[in-house]
Length: 319
Image (cartoon, rainbow, N blue to C red; front, side):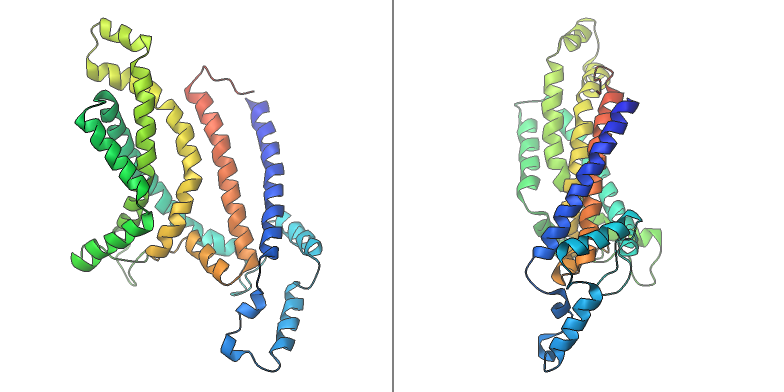
């Protein structure tokens, strides 16, 4: 196990460096000029070109791309991802400041998704090819098919504008009431993100449990007089959830993509909102830093999925 972990970490480091190179070069190759983005079109006048060239030189954008990358890489090794072109603040600090709200949103949404997917998938598998199964399939396919941003807009209209039950945006009310206030703001974005993730997870739980229910050990447990609840809950369901660990780990980066969209809809102050703003202003350091955070999340989740699968299922040997 230790040798496997060390080997995977070394491979992930190489992959991470290659991703960093690719993202850095792609961002620099994108059309547009981040310095010009700092100046409103109506303010462009005689003398602006001189300012633009001086600012580009100050930011090192006049240097060859490979020189820019080498300078950035040497700083990144020490944990310095540069400073934002717009706010002049360190990129690492900006991302870490937004990391907490994004983690809170994603972890809550993941909990909601599992609370929906496991019971619903279990019922659909036990009652397969019945009305309950078809209803579960329709529900899961429905939340997969409808874009999360559309559900977010509908939820804001219904629960905020019409009913007035929940706040429509932000993470807290200015001068709000602490944890209870944050919870009120969290309910809608987390529930919608959780519903979007619950759709495919429900299908995975159903399919995996159906396979387990046809296994020999289940028939043996039934022949020994085990109750359906005991056979399904203690034996079949437990084994069917083993593959779900891998699926959940793989889906976490996909949930981040959904969180980026919903953070815009609900004005949630997370990393996704920061990344979209950086793309709109061509803030290169922030874009690259965000991409590296996502890449690290994907690589870590893949490694944890392999390790968790081996821990919960002794039959799996990591090599």
